[in-house]
Image (cartoon, helix red, strand yellow):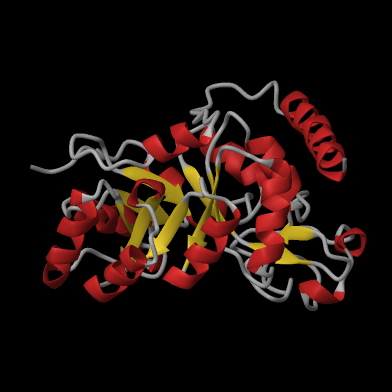
Length: 297
C-alpha cells in the first residue's frame, strides 16, 4: 500500500512537471520508457557519434549546476544526459547538491544535513560566477518527475546510504535513472536490490574490470568511466569494454573545462573527440553545439 501511495504521488508530481514545462520548444529529448530501452541506449556502437553528458547537470551563465531549469535550458540546445548529485537533508529529504555545504552554490551558508528541506528553500542557487538566480534547490523526486520522456539521470550519490537510495528509487521505478558506482561491491549491492539497474562504473584498469566481471555485474547494464582521457597504455581495457558492448566515458570537467575562454575549451574538446572515447562528460554541454561529434576514422 505504501508503495502504491508513493507511486501515485510521483505521478501527480509528474503531471505537474509536464504542465510546468509544456511551453518549452525546440528541445532535444531522450525518451526512455523502460529499462530494456535504457540498457540498449548505452550499448557501444562504433558508428554512433560521441554522446555528451552534463557533469553536475551542466551549467552556464544564469543557470546553476544541479538545477532543473539548467537541465531544461541545455535540452533546448542539444541532447544530453545528466550526472547529478543527491544528498540528504536534516529531515531525510533527498535533494541535489554536489558539496556537503551550500556555501559555493547558493546565497546561504552551512551544511546540507543541518537544514530541513523547507529551511533550504529560503536560499537561491547561484551560477558559477556567483550570480544569484531565482532558482531553488530541487528534490531528487521532483527532478525524476521532470525528467520523464526528456533525458537520462546518472546519480552520483553523495551521503545517501546506498540501501536508502535503492529503496527510494525502487519505490518510484523510473526507467531513465542509473547509478554511478566506484567499485564492484557497490554495484553488487544495488544489483541485488534491483536486477535491472543500470550503472556508470568507475573502471580505469583491467584489474577493476576483472573485479566487476567476477562480481557478476552484467556488462549489458553498464557504461564505464575510464578517467580524464583515453590513454594508449589502457587500450587493452578499452578493447575489453568495447568487446562487451560497453561505452567508455571520459570527463573533461577537471581538464579542458578549466581553460579560461570558451574557445580554448572547445579546442580541447576537439582533441578528445579524436580519441576512441564514446561519451564526454562536461560542465558545459552547450559548448558542444556545432562541434562535429562524429568519430574520427
